[in-house]
Length: 424
Ligand SMILES: *Cc1c(COP(=O)(O)O)cnc(C)c1O
Image 1 (cartoon, rainbow, N blue to C red):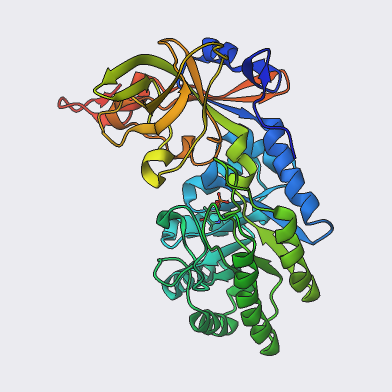
Image 2: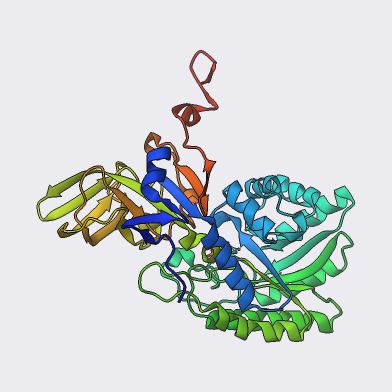
């Protein structure tokens, strides 16, 4: 059992050697705090589980694209799984080698495809015939060969906590069915600007059972075998991401079991394995620190109102996601209450937790929302005129302001006043 991230030191939660209350004092709240050592350890553990397999870890940037974090992950040898031109831009700035970048997504625009071709990424994970045709045309225009993998929809229902995070069954917009995948590879075989290099599957997010991955892999390997018999030999199989972490009392993905199931059939075929973990790397490496503004009783309910809410962390509201919430400083003797922990946003759906039992805080206290490193800041918004929060990255006793808090001017940048002038 590994140590819990953000442990208490003398009664106060800490990132590395730095107490969270000191960070809140210096950088204000709401505040994202990442512990680099935790993310690095998660990456190491994943790699160790897969042993000497020929492995590319393509970190899923949409989980947390902060440049300071991304650059460090790239420094550890990670590649990237991207879903937009914006994420490509981020990766290139952070120094992720293009030959370690795969590009997924059902709606890649021509500009995005052109930028990825110019950057010479490892592969497009293609999600439709129309997309492959555009990639072909743009590659021809440039006189380059576009490497691609077809994203297969294996029609597997993997258990995820929320329907929005299931992507591997036929009713979702992702990937193509096996027969269409074969048709795409065959079509591409006659096109010199296209090079089939892999096959891809991604079945969803926050999956804690290895078994659906074994089935998804078997499904795509059958296609790869068929292609091999037709003379199309691929170099890699991309198993996607989605390996679950522990938010409440569920068990995280047993990554060692997953590796035992998937490495042998991939190795047997001499293929490279690409994995696209997001949450598994950064989920428990981040907390959101918020300050209690008010404690309000209304009828039988208690509301703890903090300065952070759905604009900073939308998972509770959008996915019914559960996040542990703890006082940053222990409050010995505080009575325990059952309360809704809510933000200041004008939405009933603005909550961080509902019906949660915790020590009764007082205004001014700090709360830490755990396991907020993935799909936290990346899903933050400016709704209600909110400035997106600062992000701090801690490494031992070293503290980096990885992103400053937005200013009010940031909120209106690019807008136009009636007299024709841009603000600010
Ligand atoms: C979101 C996504 C991932 C990462 O999912 P996690 O649950 O964060 O591991 C990987 N691959 C693709 C294609 C995705 O869309």
